[in-house]
Amino acid sequence: MEEYLHNYFLGIMTDSEKERLFKELEKDAALKEEFAALQNSMALSGLMEEEGDKRMAAVKLKELKRMAAKRRVLRLSWKMVKYAAMILLVVGTWLLSKEYNLDIYSREYTWVQAPKGQRYMSL
Image: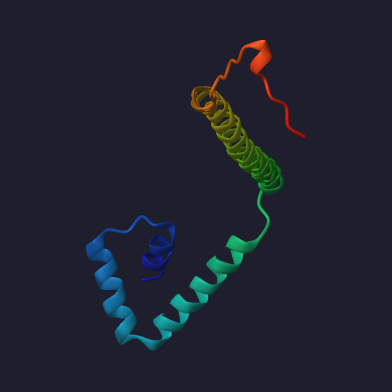
């Protein structure tokens, strides 16, 4: 049965063998305690430092910093796009109003022409 336990934690058990192991665990309390102890030791050994952990940590930190910088650049770019759109909107509105308002006002005034002797000036 000890071989079943080791195979279980190595992940090389078939489904039928797993069912048999769990049935035995329900029946035998000593086997259940051994299973729990082995499970705890496997969990604790997973927490130990392994070869390549520092390199992987450095790579992941570098990747995190790159992603943060990329996010910062995207946020800044988006703000710049919004400001540029606002400026274009204001300038476009001003140009359109200048173009169309001058035509309207140029047609509204009246030209009065009087001969030299008939001009009257009031104060």
